[in-house]
Each structure stands twice: as C-alpha cells, then as structure tokens.
Length: 212
Image 1 (cartoon, rainbow, N blue to C red):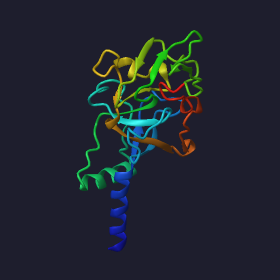
Image 2 (cartoon, rainbow, N blue to C red):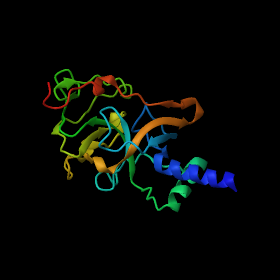
Image 3 (cartoon, helix red, strand yellow):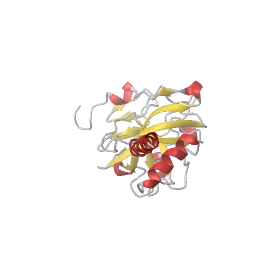
C-alpha cells in the first residue's frame, strides 16, 4: 500500500514538473527527429526562457491549425503522466507545438542581412543547428517582439510553419509567454537519441535590445 501511494505521488509530481511529448513532425530536425519523445520541464515558464531554448507551447490562440508538432506522449510513460495529471484536473491541451526561441520581448529580429543571416538586435546569428541545406528563411521579415511575447522558429526552416507563417495574424506571429508549457530538456526515446538540448551561444550571448 505504501509503495502504491509513493508511486501515485511520484506520478502526480511528474505531471506537474515534467511532461512527456511525442513529436511526429520534422519541423525541428535535426535537433528533434520525427518519432522522438522529449521531456519538458514545466518549472520553466515563458518569462524564464532564453534565446535558443527549445520550448513547447499551447498554440490554440496563435498557431492552431498549422504544423502541430508535439502531442502528449501516448506511450506507457505518457499515459501514466496523463492519468496522474487528470486526478488533479490538469488540462494537458491538444494544440501543442515545439519550436526554438529566437526573439525575446523587445528584441528586433530581422531576416536577412546582406550575408543572408538572421539578425537579432543587429547581431548576425550563426545557426549551426539548422537542417543541412536550409537557409535561415526564404521569407523576409522585420519585427520587434512585443512585450509578453516570443518569436519562435523551427530548426528545419523549409519544413516549419512557425512565427513567419503567422505574420499577418494577431500578434504578428509571436507567441504569448503565458502559453509556454515548458522548456524541452532532453530526448529520452529512442534510446540511440537520448540527450539534452544545448542553448546555442550564438543566440544566448546577444545583448538585450537597446543595450549595445
């Protein structure tokens, strides 16, 4: 009985702190491959994320019918987490997406400069994480990220309906920070792809807007 109670507590805690997602699409290749299962740290809120973080967010109010990438893992771990979460009324959502944070609130994000690079706050970004052969963007854009919002893009730019695809929508393609479910921390399945996600220094070291 004590073992069962301990297991239940563990599952409930995991439902609050960590969530498992299955990623069926290729919009984040090569960082995340179709079929990967990732763990998301729900302690990291949208106000805590940094440039370069890979995040899962609820796109109901923004990205809703395009390139829906992850959904709650329906495997054994996913079912256990979902079952535990349902006991305490946690809404796991059905419109979840996974992308990389490129722009924080106040950032000026432009693509592309004369060298064909994305720039953030005037700093060219070397994007070694892009899918081989992809350019930073086939679509030009110039946006200052509003307060309380994020500019997000997939690593497989030619196969990702990300912020660029919603420039004409309310919010200009940006995602509300309060819609962030958490930061993707690692791939845990399949076993040959176990590993964490690095925060690229080319993004992490860019000064905040207006501080250069």
